[in-house]
Image 1 (cartoon, rainbow, N blue to C red):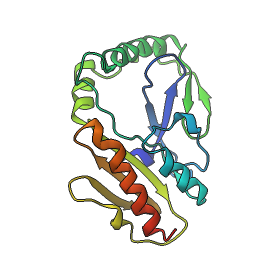
Image 2 (spheres, rainbow, N blue to C red):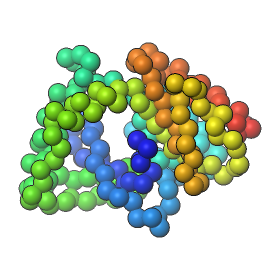
Image 3 (cartoon, helix red, strand yellow):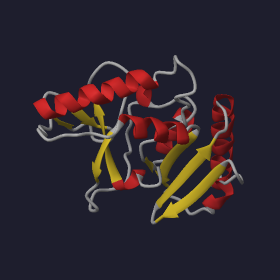
Length: 191
């Protein structure tokens, strides 16, 4: 999550739970995007991303913080099956990926694709339960540390980019945490 702004995020064009792949971003590219597909935003971060864009700020790919691997019907098994199928399609050159910021499409052909270990991916997914993130490039000066909430929300500035990460302990905490981040963001920005 802390490296999201350094990467280009690619979304497979297929049915089922989305799974992102990434490549390193060219350092000469601007960080973030000034346009997003609202339907692809998670519910809890949608108001914040749209508010940032309305201010003329760029945003990076975001995530409200999901909980997976905690029940039999949460979709992690389906996601891991898609991961295995994606690997086959990478080797065949039949999987189209779309850049989450630019809409650029590629169809990589990687005959030697191995892909991540499913057990380790599941473990990391569960370990990151409740971790959400958003990055934005503000056009105004501010003390963005005011967005932080000890144990719940961390804030890091990386050049012009401000990275906010939430640490919800349960699914019920996700939306209220992001609502508080949004309230604090408007206050720090003076709007």
